[in-house]
Length: 434
Image 1 (cartoon, rainbow, N blue to C red):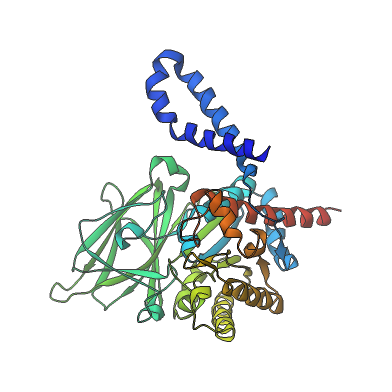
Image 2 (image 1 turned 90 degrees about the vertical axis):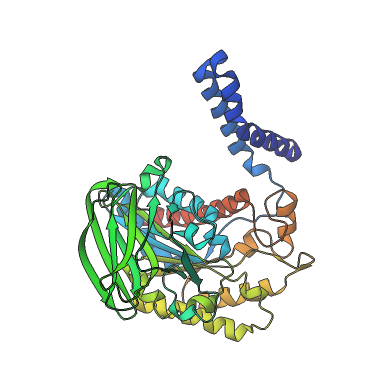
């Protein structure tokens, strides 16, 4: 039966991929309504067949779920008052930067508790790395990209784990949110950056080249945060780096951009990930924690460990120290925030051997979370444990490197995370209402 359902799912995927071509050929003959019926049926069958994958998953759960009670309480309030918001910050590596896993979590939160802001973003395309579909960037100018995995620059990296630096005295880039993502339109934005000297200047313009009103500026040690507002909802802007003294080159290092819609409440899900990053790369930052406070996160999720498990020289003691340094610094900057640590997924070493160090890192994360009263989602166990990624790969859910996953594989992980979260939330809510 399971093989039969799996075959149905594969057929559904083919039909979904070919739907546009089918529409172009047959729209005139059978009409738009019939096409929409076919599309809806295909999507329904695909969704129903998701459970047919033959992977050794276990029931999803959180360790230390009682440490999230204040978050569950806030969500209960949001159910009664749609103007309320909850800010979530999710930090991670390539599993997170790809945005497939977090998108699944984000949209589940949106469906249950309301759509908030786009939140933290970055011009990834200019940094020549993978970018979420909802952010399009363009520039005629050359930019220098640095990230926290480059040890010479780790200390200087902030909330995005990377910086973008202009090569020339007067440069600009454009950011646009496509109409298909109109829910992410915004009327406020904040820019986090580090100027090289007093001549550095940042200007924000809308699509008509009208300069946005700067409402305030926060000057911190090592960085500046400029806040802008617009009377209208915007879907694009231009950011210009310039200097007030043409005789002096004054580059700026951009740390991140936060897009906000002040007209509604809901879940504001901020995501920051860097391919190849480890706990120590994020812990080394002198400004990450302080910049995170501008997002005011009530919940911080940390999904790291895959690259730590591939570091042959990393001891468990050193790993735990790096983890502690990162968590403590974030706690200090956000004293009311609650934490969820996730364990890394199973993976292979050089595609040939089960990486036993993944379980070692996983055990260290679980023990640290328990000792420090933090919630923990054990992805490693939920996905099936040692060697389980091979079964995911056989079902087309993992990449050939046996470390990363396909889009659908990440979406399944995101769904498993949310199923555990919402289960514990409903249990808490039911107890509160007794």
